[in-house]
Image (tube, rainbow, N blue to C red; front, side, top):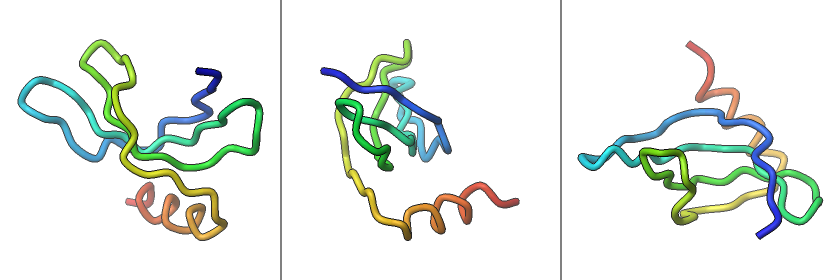
Length: 68
C-alpha cells in the first residue's frame, strides 16, 4: 500500500489492548490528502480503516476537535 500519514490530528479512543483509534490526515497513492479514522496497534502499526472523507467540511470539524 502506498500511503503517507500527513498528520495525526487526534486520538479518539484507546481499547483495553492498547489499540488507538485516531483521526489522521492521509494521502493515498500521491493524491490529495483526506481525513481518515483508523485503528493503530499499540506499536503504531495501522490496522483497519473506519471512515475516509475528502470534503472541505472535514477541515472545519477537525479544527473543532483540536480547539480547547
